[in-house]
Structures are given as structure tokens and as C-alpha cells.
Image (cartoon, rainbow, N blue to C red; front, side, top):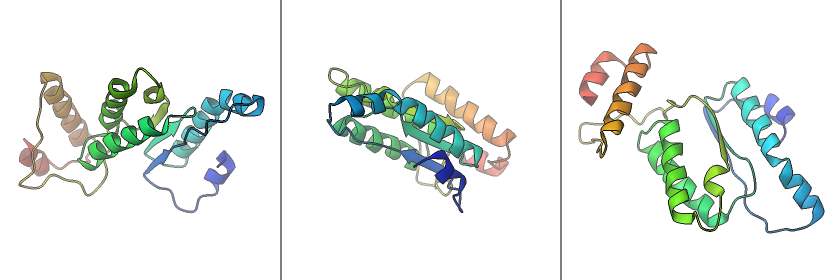
Length: 164
């Protein structure tokens, strides 16, 4: 995938996650390619934002498969649960760091671009759903996100009242 491939996309998705796996190859060509992978990831991420993608995650270097799987599981669990992009990423990084810190730096491989407050459409909370808060900072962040959503008109006043 190159930036020119991205420019030619006929439909622009809202969210893109570009992941890679650890191939375990050790040779001079593979090593040189890995040295520049973070620059390629940055180019891809910024190009996707330029064409209108709202949020992007791109792996900046080869990653450990088990840690990547844990990152994706935690990230998508949060995102599909209605958590904003930035917080979902933070949660996944923390989870992978704590679980795999002695053997991999995969938690830091993911470069994020776009709106940290981006949420997937269609995941509004229903009457039986609620959010558990464990820290005061989580409550403050949720209130900040709600104010931002109200100001940007992505949340209606009546929906904000239902959430509170």
C-alpha cells in the first residue's frame, strides 16, 4: 500500500487500522526496510487523514503477534463499546504494556492520526446500558467529551440529557 494507492480510493472509510505482523526475518535488507517503516507509517497515516479518514492507526514497526492481538482485542472492545478513539487507543496501549512489557515494545508501535474524540456511528447507548467509572478523571473526561460533542453538534441536547 502506498500513498498513491490511497489517493485513488473511490470510497473513503471513516476509520482505518493498518497492522503488520512480525515476520522474524533477520537479514540486512529486512533490517534496512524496518528502519524506515515508521516513516512509511507516517506517510500512510497523514495521507489517509488528507483524503478524509477521521481516525487512523498505523503500526510504525514490526510487532509481536501476541501483543498485537491483545492490542486489537482491547482497542476494538473499547471502540465498539462506545469509547472515543483516543481513549480506546490509550486503554489498549496500557493493557499491552502491562501484559507484555518484559518482551516487546509493541504497545508503542501504533501511530495514531485524526480526531481523538472520534466514535463509531450507531453505537449510541440504549436504555439498559451504562458506563462504569473507576476514577474521577474518567468522569471528567466523559464530561469533557460530552461538552465537545455538544459544541460540535455531533450530540443532541436530548441525547446528552439521557446519557447523564
